[in-house]
Image (cartoon, rainbow, N blue to C red):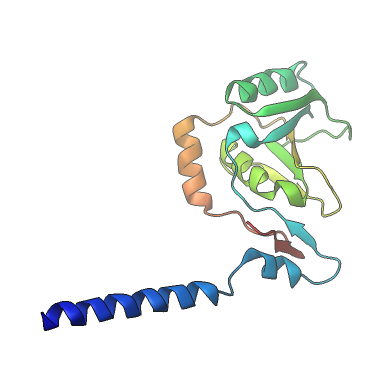
Length: 171
């Protein structure tokens, strides 16, 4: 009988300890964003699923129709394609691809890096206000990674990293 009383008291004390710890928790995301220095962007580093990622696909090569072909392939992988066209900046890219994005698309751009096996160059624009990633296909592009390669690449990349002079958005 004494053993049951002692165990009961220990369980009650443990519950009280857990409740107090949860009430006093100071690790909320709001405090991280609230303590962000003035002028710094609040970035969304949430790793998205393909169906949540919005993309513009641009062609920066001399190959006609490449943006449409890649956009179709990405659309078949459940990405939301907003636009497929030639690069509006008119640049020619020798590498595999360039990913252009702003603070609201940091996690989405991280996912896209995996589809290019981390061979795409990233261009972060802190003033950009949309959540769209511009995928600019270059002359070094051959094909998108397979599902297995994407998963392996995501594991190698780890979690999305905050760009310079940004703070994490509350999650």
